[in-house]
Image (tube, rainbow, N blue to C red; front, side, top):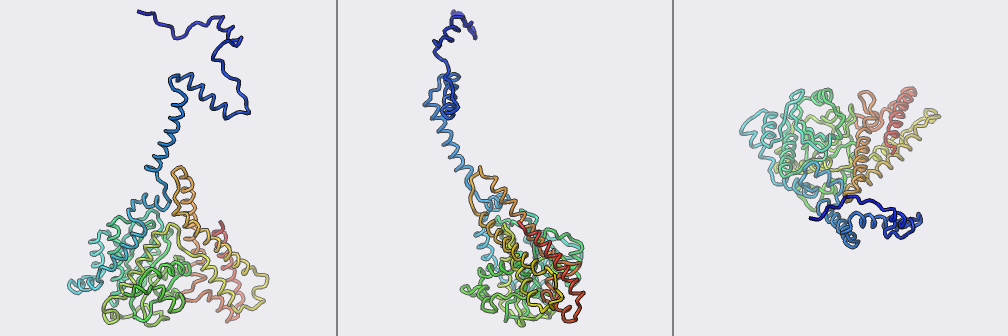
Length: 491
């Protein structure tokens, strides 16, 4: 049996001498700073040679190339390039694309006859709120009673931002809750197919009581509410399709209206109709409706859509025979598509679709058209503030447009930090948009949008009554709101 060799052999003095004299074969080369890349490569080569002598240089280079290639293949197969919009949908287990959601939603609305609800009501003679609750339970939407016996349910989104779709039970008017039920049924079908909203959708059915919406805003936190779409006396006639809205939603409504057919004419959209009617001139919001306390007391941008025979009518309480006005329920179906699709798109858009510049332009136009005595605004900087508000609002809208485009850009996995920054920017800009209208609330009144449908009408009243002190007091309130708005919107 051979003797085992020790792990460390003794070093002979002659070896040291030969090493010092330069006869040692494995002396290391002298390194020079000027040749750093070659030096690093040589160091790696020596390290491999000394520690892994069986590994040749060619094998080493081949293994490095193979690892790089494997990482690339892994990234392409298991970590594909994705956009933030796609990531949002995956996080919320949304199995439908936006195009699929839009198509299924409109197809589902088309497949049902709204008159079936009335046939059931005539046969069963139920209390209306109980009937609404029964239908919602059947569609697995899990409604609940709130404060003053309002029925509500919500479809939870990825974020806490909320869009409210509101109606009221009116024994003289079936149109509101019929459209409400049809929209609810369609969202229930969409949810079954794997759709999930980005923003939360909350549906509320108020009682036949004007105080019901006021009670609701007193007992519920509304900080996360982005906007409200109201379904109330939706079919008062058949001559005009009337859209009343906050100016923040005007551009959004215009865009969506071009995607929905007017009545059953698939070659003529609601957008075409609104353009032909009055070139997209939307009606003002008024007092006396479900949305009124939300808009005029809490500063929550609102929308109301209805068919009417009198375009300038402001009456909300009418006894209506829907069977005579819309015997085929074509008008009901048109409004259900329009309102439902508006709600769907508001819940789907990652960047909040409020056009701030519309708001600024409205203030600019109406204030400049006021016949103000020159001495009343002496040394006032109100015009400068309005101009500054217009400037920052245009910049804000432009930045929102850029963010929406970036949503669909695909990034490789190792650039996750870019998507994190984009998500943060979208959240920040959305919070600012959501707060804007609230800045123009003074106490329990809106200082820009008046409940009589006018804009800044309080200034006209002060001018007509020659009330200079009242005018200056109102100017001070408006200036304060503009300053806060400018500070909020600056990027």
